[in-house]
Length: 404
Image (cartoon, rainbow, N blue to C red; front, side):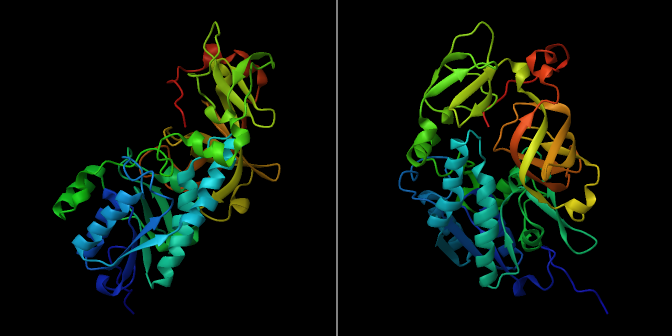
C-alpha cells in the first residue's frame, strides 16, 4: 500500500478537493494567507468576524476587525475570487473577551485579551463554524508554525521571523485545535508576506499592522473598564512596602506592575509599582529591586508538550519561559505545587505581572516548540530579603520595564 499523498498543508488529497476556511481580519497577513492558498488551488472560503460595535473605531488606524477592515477583507476576497462571509460574533466576544478583560483589570491584573480571543473566539467558535462548512482546516495569518510529529499529532513552534513571532498569544491552543489549524506564514518573513501581497495585487499590501487593543477605539481602555467595573476606578492609597501612605490614586486600573512614570508622588529615589491590591484598592510601590521575582504561581495551565503533564512532571521539568510577549524566554523549572503548578525562574525576572501569560518553550531561541503555558496568578521572591535591597549589588542592569 502506498502512503496517502499530502498536500502543502499536510492534509490528504488534492488542493482542489480540499476546502480551507481562512480567518480574514482585513490585514495583510490573513489576506496573503487566503490568496496564497487560492493560488495553490484550494477551495478557499473567507470568514471575517465582526467582534464589536465598530462605529467608533471605523476611522481609527490600528484597530482590527473594525468597519474598514471588514470592507478590506471583502475587497480581497472579491479580488482573488473566493466566497466571503461576515459573522456577527459581537455578543460572544463581549462575554468571552471584553468582560474578562474588565474583570481582570478590576482584580489588579494586567490581562492580554488577544490570548482569550484566540482561545475562545477564533480557535473554538470559528473553528467549529469551519467544521460545519465542511472545511478540512482553518488557516490563519498568525506568525507561528506547526509541525507533524511521529505519532501524527502536531506541535506548535515559533515563527521563522523572530520579530513577528506570535506564539506567546497562542499558548492556550489545544492539541485537538492544532490538528485542525494551519499557519501558512509561519516559515515566512513579514517582508516576504508584503511582497506576496503586491504580487497578488492586493490593496492591503502596504496596510499598517494593527496596534493596541482592537475593541478600544480611543486607546483609552480605562473608559471601558470604568463603565463595566466602576470599582476599578475608585480612588485609594499609594503605599510603600511597609504600608505607609505616600499619596492617593484615582483607580488601580491606571497602574501595572513595573510602572515607574505617572505615579503622582514625590520621592527621593525612583519608585515602581510592585503590587496592586484590588481588595483594599492599594497601589504598593517600592525600589526597583522589589520587582525582582523568581517564583510564579500559575492558573489555567495548558500543556501541549509530549505526554500528559501530570505524568511527565515528576520532580520538575526544565524548560524556558517567557513572562511577557516582549521578553526573551529564560530557563526555569515547572513543578506541581499546592494542587496546581508553579514556575521557578533560574535567574529571576523583573516586573512579573498577574494576568499576563507565562509561556513554556523547549529552547530559548530559534523555532522552539511551544510546550504550553498558564496565566500568572502571583509572583514572589524566594527570599524576602532580596526584595529589600540585597539585589542591588548582584542584579544585572535591566532595561526600564515597559507597560504590558
